[in-house]
Length: 145
Image (tube, rainbow, N blue to C red):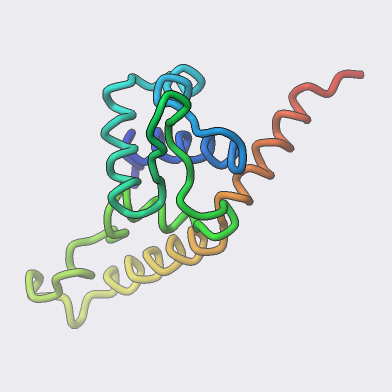
């Protein structure tokens, strides 16, 4: 399973917003420059996140975008589902009627376990956890003897 660029870039964008939570709103250009994402593509991602109620816009000359809720209240699952859609590794999990082998398929059980595992991991982390990891990794990268 491979994540789309939409999800990878979108996660990086909400991480930027999380790092700046409680400060001033961030403009698309600032996020795009920091994360090396095109402005046009980032606008589409922010629009999706805004429609899902994860991000809100602030109008005016000092406007931009902010998280709609504190980072500790937004799970990675919330962001993932918004950007990637349902976590379904095999179509038969969502539409068992499409597969005549669905009732006695051993691999379907594995796909279901995979789906549950992914969901549990994404539910167990928030954007605040992602901020903590980012801060720790930057500190470790800057540590010199």
